[in-house]
Image (cartoon, rainbow, N blue to C red; front, side, top):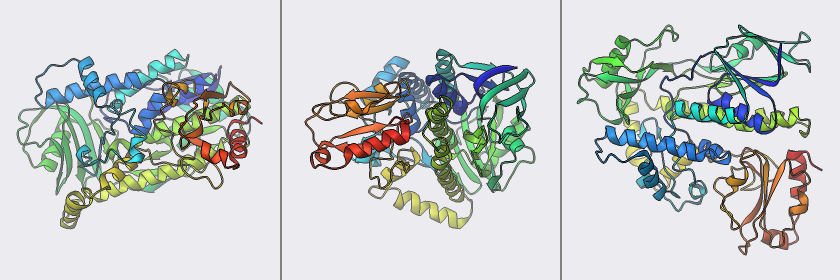
Length: 529
């Protein structure tokens, strides 16, 4: 029986990021994946700003920027750009536009428009450093994270089918090791994380309720060859039969078809099925002559696990929540789960976790996932093919989304930067929010000090008075950043980028309780006293 600290079931983005987060903390991790190779099925085409900031904090932003530059090059070639600029030149051009918030994505087919984004909005301005690293397709993200895990010594076993989990004592609710039974032998671990997708075998075995709403549509993503595409509109197009997008790269088609639900989602998508769906939704009599790789079939089945934990087994990613893939929210939701759970589970294993720390994984992540499920349901409702929905789309597209400030609000919500946790009693912003892009007067950015997964304490006092608050340098990185700007706050930031304490020099000089609040934050989150 092969022994490790944690077995992660599933080598998708959620499982790989979680494995990397655990390994950063010195935890032994084994990832089990049933597929022999990374899945090349076309899925999410980009990541959110919040997800790109996760990569930034771990030193992976340059790799994400390279992936985005490649995607931009392919999109420009599809659009007829004949400049033949290299990936390096594309990247350099993107960098020249940095420090701007890029409104990538859409809401129910309404594209976010950068010309309507107010770049002076302080909410958006705090999250601009990763603007050149959000165009990362899911396949490229998996390769990037797999390389990251390999560098950290994570053991990944591919081609391994998991059959069941059981406790060494007979009950998974006991405080005992968990055995993962596979076709490659048994693995035993102190903890197991199921990141094995929306049809999670482990979630089903544990009997965790998966509650939500039934599907009412079917969708497809594919890269296909057509005999004539002159009738297809590029970008997002709504029709009475559904919604489709052709592009932005050669052959890529995404479509949603109303009133049809597949009898068996496990069956491969045939060329005939894809062609029928494209013709029905677009109204264009195209002929699909071939498909490059496997097409994806999906529905708007929307569900969430009632609980994310059963003893020493936890759920993350699609195993914990599923919904329509509109806007790529599922990928980003899973990455958020992974970065939130990783350091908390590691702290529990390393025996320094404050009481109740691991419980905050569910209390913080469950409400956010419920919100995302409603966000995707709203998009599905706005795509229905009746006359009243068409009228509603005209009002939203022509009037509401073009109103001053509306685009900023929509892109902030969809990009994940508005999430906030209850991390301290009576806390006010920025406490509980994501740190985002924090420039340091001393040198670099806050993200540069977060690569090893520690807490980061940024001390902006002129005399370094907070240095003695770092009682355990292995858990907290201290950054002296003296500044004459009395309004810039000192910060304590968790490994997942959440600010758990902040104070300005003005507040300290007024004789407030800033140091007491810092003591409380360090004790509550790092366990140091």
